Each structure stands twice: as C-alpha cells, then as structure tokens.
Length: 85
Image 1 (spheres, rainbow, N blue to C red):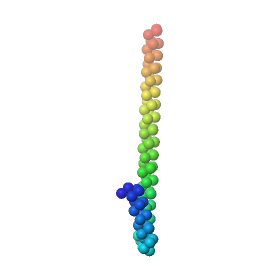
Image 2: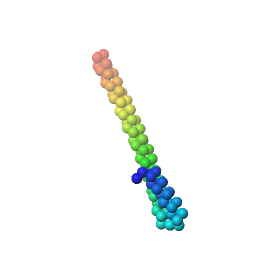
Image 3: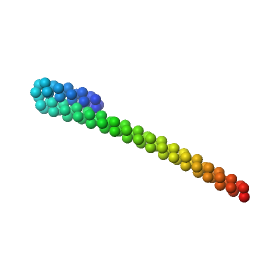
C-alpha cells in the first residue's frame, strides 16, 4: 500500500479504537499511521537522492566535456607550433 493509504487506514483504525475503547485497535492504527508517515519520508529521501545523483551526473558530463575541449585546444596549439618550425 501507499504511504498515504497507510496513514488514512491508520487514522481510521485509531479513531475506531478510541471510540470503542479498543486499545489494541487504537495501537494498530497508530502503527499503521506511523508506517505510512515513514514510507512517505523514505519516498522523499529516495526522490532527493535520485535528484542529487542526476545533478552529479550532469556535472561530471560537463567536466568531461570541458576537459575534452581543453585537450583538443592543447593538441591544436601543439600542431600549430610544430608547423611553424
């Protein structure tokens, strides 16, 4: 189940347990609600982690491209220097 579904299910069980005086049902509801909250936090952390990884990949590609350009520039300068001799 999804995080939000677990939270709603937990809230319903918690409320039903509270209304009926069923401490076990109330505790089960709290556990379900908290499980949903934790799933939601994990989903957010996963999304943030994926975002950071994607940004790092982009930066690495940028650095590699700059290095290639600089390497080509050095090679061209070396060729020009050799042709002038």
